[in-house]
Image (cartoon, rainbow, N blue to C red):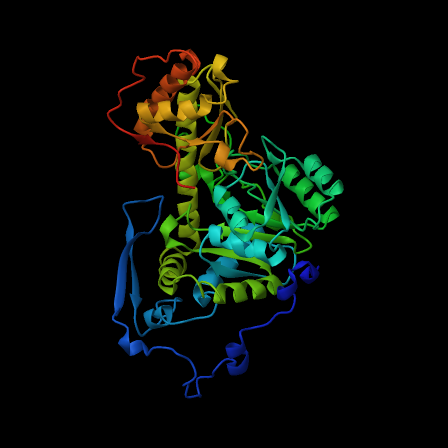
Length: 474
């Protein structure tokens, strides 16, 4: 299905830059004096070497990643090629691996799909949204969602339209009702969602839920922007004993199929990132979509970032193609899933002990977040209670993200909702119990405190010796 008619007007006609349209692609036989391109002989980087864990299942084994300046590095480009200008598609070896990996992981059901390199999902969100929305338009989002996406929308002057969620994410009936009853000045063309380990709620859509969301998108002709950085951090139900599932056992667990894998129309733009599965500041990822959409995204890349760092792409390509291969990559992902499962199991177990009667939550099966509704007791109706709780938490030496920045529908006059997002990825596991003890103490201080118009309590809340960061950066 061709959705070109849904693009914003100036992207409906595919136009390369005037310079590239005139110059085309120089052949090896040509003496190329057209571009403002430096000679590789001036590049001071002659060789780059890094030590790489060859298998996450065997951390004692390490491999050497080597990039040389004038010769191919296995299937990866030479260092000179990686350091030179390139087009907005991405390095060939990098995209080749990710194309094969996407085929294996998702098996897209239509023929003309492909991948393009990205600078991670925050940049990808902005570009994907800009294909279909411009200033003054509306886009559907989950009622709680990634603040980075909301910042992108605010900057572009595109209004988010929240849709209700439950413990599995977007409610299909709510999405259908929203679209059916929509009477806004501009049509709803797209929905942005995080279907796995959702940020901030930790919700993961079941296969049945994903099918229902896709059916609603078909009914109302919506493009789905599938932001899925936590997809490969699925680890399943809670285990009785933390660390019970090994990386080898994780290989036996099947992942919930992605929305891309259900897509028969070519209406899903899938955003993947290495930020959560390799390292955040590599600033690399990939987008999967129909070819004609990627043609427009290439134009957007070339007018902004050109492409992600060729050096970073080369390091990742060399590691994935030549050091790890598909087996090593899969071993790494399974080891990550086992680590996150153990962290989740321990954190939830301790939360049940330390926050009994103070917080309720749904146990996540993916990702890195526990989304908690805090019971503030008699202070629940006090609009100052959550701000005071955050201050009490700081004094106690524990930090978690409040729910308000994630809430799409929160107005300035609304009282902050009693939600906290705890990220169990960064803090050492031996800090989990102290973090939850301090949170319990802070909650108790708000429950026991007098109202602001009465005499405040003078007893110190706590005297921490260290700060425990449990909120994450995204």
